[in-house]
View 1 (spheres, rainbow, N blue to C red):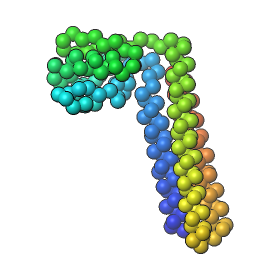
View 2: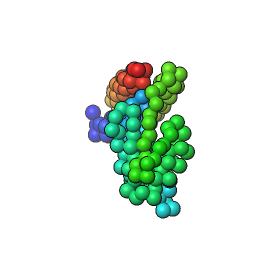
View 3: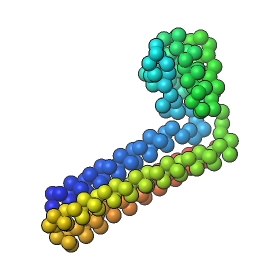
View 4: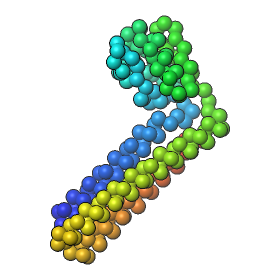
Length: 187
């Protein structure tokens, strides 16, 4: 195996790993009934005129499975934090006591669980598409090498290796999605 093919296969694995990491990040945003500080990732607060991620303007903790407590470093931010949470469409109602903002996370209804499973399946499918696109790019690189003088049988072997890597990552995506679906549907 030539050095170029080895590099192509390594890049293929690396890029497909990134697709799995992205899927895990997206799954962490899908709530499965229990409160998690990661639910609030992506929420930005108006912090003295600058939009700042919530976790950079406050401490976010989960004292129990149904509650999130947001403790801003600056008490004047409480109103802005409440407003940002209301506008985020998470379906959570913030309550403040002047010191902290509390979010009570209601248990999921059956209908909401099914919606979340659909969302999770959609994210998994997007990851599979990303993996297939990476496979396509890798195979194009192999074909380019073949045009530049790589032996045909080496090119075929490289494409077979790329396909094998792709199959492994598609299987991993299916496994991760199945775990998330089970987590969502567990009451």
